[in-house]
Image 1 (cartoon, rainbow, N blue to C red):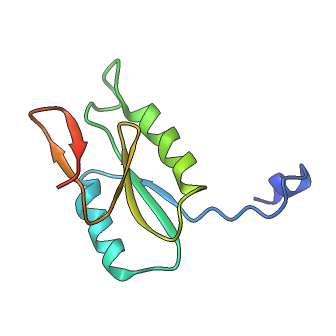
Image 2 (tube, rainbow, N blue to C red; image 1 turned 90 degrees about the vertical axis):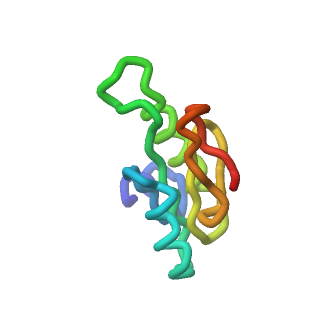
Length: 99
């Protein structure tokens, strides 16, 4: 973060982005803790090692989301942001959606 300040960006406070398996379940644990930080969980429907994976896009999207969202726990997948308590993985459709 110090490097960004030397570049004239000013104060830069990133709370967190986490890429995990079972992002919705993990986000639930953090969400119930009601931390005063923004934590965005992400992952992928298709593993990173497979060509055409959604992992790189989801990671970039989650990083951007972490800079704009208020404190809380979220899941960022497929260009959508979900509150920690309103997300599910739909394996049949290959997407994440609200409950």
